[in-house]
Image 1 (cartoon, helix red, strand yellow):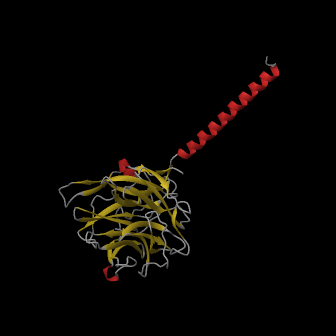
Image 2: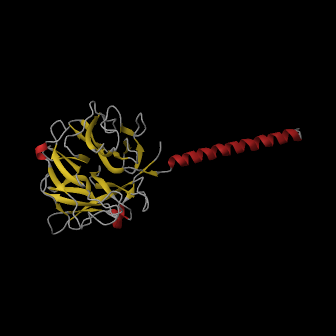
Image 3: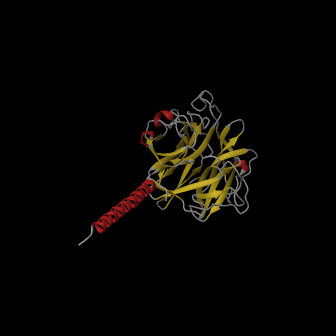
Length: 339
């Protein structure tokens, strides 16, 4: 026969065990929920490298911008930070990289089985190397490309014949887009090929009156479609709500460039976002084109800029060929889950 004191002790022990189990379950559930909660990626000037069904995302981190983080994905829908010894970073300021500040607008490309990482630092352009698409990237002897002026926003385009062209922005009383052919070593331009592409047009969508005002075209990306070269670019000050994207067409990678008459094709009106722009066009494993871009944190705050994605379509017209359309109504945020 069990005494009352024994029965009460057992009941108390059972209640304590149930409470402990409930607390463990609750803590575990909250931990899993926190792990599962997706967060929007905060990279500006984004670019995506695609290889063998894998996607790698790079971009400009929020200030102080002393290196580059990267994310990877198998479907471009869910992303995770690249696993590196310095979590997420594939290149940082230091002895094996050019520059110590202003790390902006990176792009990864592959050439002769080497991974090349073009980026801006100290308002100059440098090209690092790595053994894989997820880095790390470095320069054994850090240096920047020649040019004589401040230059930013590199984008390397390979034409059908293998020739490589560096589209970039030169700073001289404003931001202006230039192109030059790269040398065989992929570490500098051929100076005699340097060619002006675009400067902002006064009185147009490229130079609006919304503060802050600036004489700016930047963020070049080039793709070739049906024999035509399409140059995507952004205009206005990056802090302006009127920062937006247009494109121009040429028959040669060196131009001359003819602007699309209905620019901009991505702006605050068709996205509902403030300051959308400076992106990269890429083709996924299903042969669908996309444009990855950034926008302001909100309509009242610029930083941290958020990363977005929208599909690209080609509209057949009676004019000089297909027109590009960024399907802004199908935009979606790029999200990641913490490991």
